[in-house]
Length: 234
Image 1 (cartoon, one colour):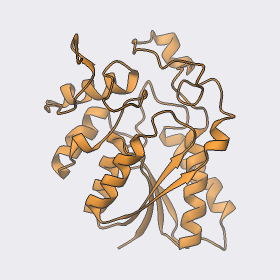
Image 2 (cartoon, helix red, strand yellow):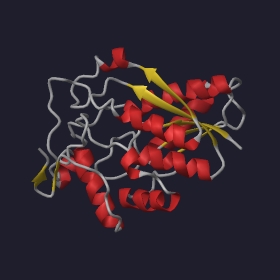
Image 3 (tube, one colour):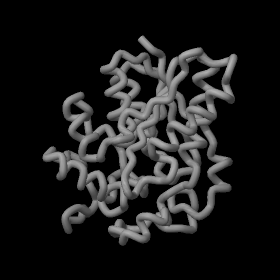
């Protein structure tokens, strides 16, 4: 079974990816990264996934770097996480979402590849989904280019078959939900909300996209949200 270092935040996509890889026979080492994000509660859900899958799990502390990543609502305490609004075509194309941390996936993947080289793993895995709201480093072109760079950077030190896999990159989020249903992913053991807290807010972009994905997949969403469909919890 191939040994794979999988970047798992605890979110719907990355946890589904981990279940998918395990079903494919991978031996998993789950890696979560603290890059200064306000919703660190997600890592509790990554730990749950690791326990359910019988995988090892480590959290890498890059929070000092996070303090330098101003300009994003996820890492900058002076910027509130906004309620979700569907962008017009121009905004969606320009990549100006306040929730994007530019170059984040490049940062996470660099750490994962370093770990993979040290452990002689055969693959690094990341659960990116390419859609209109995705960051620039969440698409197939980026994945292919990053792998080409790492094959140069790790030549002679990495496992000769070291590869980068992004099994969800060509799926819609609703497809991810459908896949997770087939795999038996426990959805209440995943976290999406950008705001953190103890209950997912139901209003930020991540929560809204989560609800839409379940609806479009025709799957009942078991998540408890603080606000959902005009209903607010006390």
